[in-house]
Length: 454
Image (cartoon, rainbow, N blue to C red; front, side, top):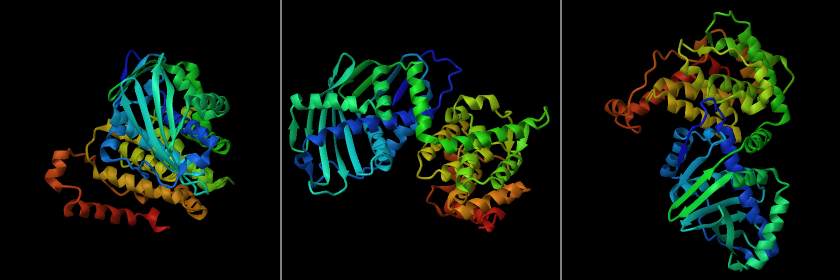
């Protein structure tokens, strides 16, 4: 995917979070719209076999394509009140469809067990085909569909629809489509889709090419922002984030005015002490602490994107947070811990994106110290949320931790090496030398005091 941004304001720092949640729920709304039509005769259109392969997984090329989109072309700049040009080829479009269909399968409909969709870009036409696997019933297990959309006045118009072997006449599906749109207008996800459709100023469909010119207004963005918060942050979590954000602010405010740097320990001890003293759910508290610290450490992730503008009144003092006098290690540990703490949750995907964006901008090369910090962070995140007892034990550990070496072994200076240097020293990632180095790191991590307590 290529996104060209012209004349965007430098101060625009809007979150990838909103773009990712928006696109996910736009696809969800499209699925919901298609699935609302078969009510006219499910016993006719359901089948015992899927026309299109299920359990599709992203291949390395598709993963690379999506990473390029998220990292090199930061989606936050889609929301800046200027015209944005987006160009997709067929392969990139299908990579996105696979990703978002996976997200849909995992999160949205209890009765939907799997889905598969692919798109074909033809002159002035988009052909969408796929299969939905549903829970077994008397009528069949799969809904196979084909839909053709034509461009008309910069809008996509459903031209033809086939459900299983049944070609649905336009006289039927168009009134049903209008009815479905009215019903879906009550659905928050569909509001996001409608907002996107309204933002399209120009649409061009050619062979293997989809071009969009979009312009998001502040009203469009406000809708996405509020909906993203609602979907990600429930009321209890929101209160916890505000509580720990305020405490983080008080910690940094209490420091000497001339202070510019602080050990990660100096943040972990009071934050986890507060959690230990509270009567809330320790797992949710640990998640909130790791999320707050991620927002503090990663410039790409703004806490106001998660909890709203009220956080702006209590922003912590900007500081260089270190471990072993390095400011990269805390970022790796905390971001990895937060991702692991939100495993199987939308937030884990969002945090992963932010971490990739941050890592891609560091340009430090391959680093064993980064690997060490990432693995430690992952273990911490798992312990923080695996069960109630483990969560409380972790709070006790960090509330009383005194030395950085209790959870981070000495790793020395930054050790980033280029791909050429890595090949010269280790050959490949399957070589004995490399795997032995990883095994040594794992042994060192297991011997840390933090992991001896569990």
